Length: 221
Ligand code: SF4
Ligand code: SF4
Image (cartoon, rainbow, N blue to C red; front, side, top):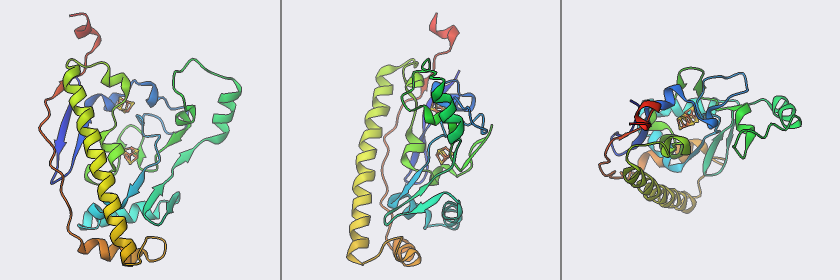
């Protein structure tokens, strides 16, 4: 039976949903050339808190290098945005035929793929260096199909609490950079060195009970 559980790293964590390996959700539909990519149609944004984690290890620095070298990455003052594949022509043709049967608001996601996803494999970035959205997103179809909805609510509450902390950390790091007249666009290397010297603040995740995802047999039980 598929499960949702919390996986912890050193001061970091993620929600693991085992059915993402064989995604059947609407958000996982792909009409683009990159098939079997789950909902990794998303173009990830790496904020200061993510880059701060990366610059603390060689492995993280290699990940940062990959992100910067991705042809679709745009460097902003306080974050990096990695854009990937988008089949615009396929999307426009699809819209002309107005296929409204799929209940997803932004249908462009069916024609997109993150630059770091590998078809049939998943994300090629180590979990500790993915951003908050990538590590904590679970689609509604899965969340509405679990055996313990009260525990699922706890997962959602904890995710919101963590998101507020992430926002606070990003603002604190940005303030420190501003005070030192630094940002990625004007002085990338200087900003990285500065972040390397700032200690990481760690977040304490509470224990969360494992949840089962119901399959057709267990729904009728
Ligand atoms: S979160 Fe949902 S849509 Fe995304 S890969 Fe997992 S099962 Fe698929
Ligand atoms: S960074 Fe990884 S988890 Fe996030 S969208 Fe891209 S492939 Fe998916």
